[in-house]
View (spheres, rainbow, N blue to C red):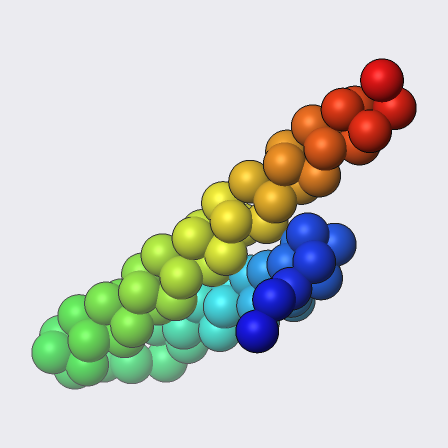
Length: 76
């Protein structure tokens, strides 16, 4: 399956938004927890989703840079 660069950017932006919203929900919910083990688990869960969101953002930025370079070479 081939995705165009524009589709890659859109999909990565949507996925990053979802991942970062899950991470934000995880960090916000820490205030309602009292068990230290549950707090540590929730932090790990939230940081994992931050990691996934950052990877999605990185791939989207990479696709954007590739699209900008391919547009420049087509104009010449």
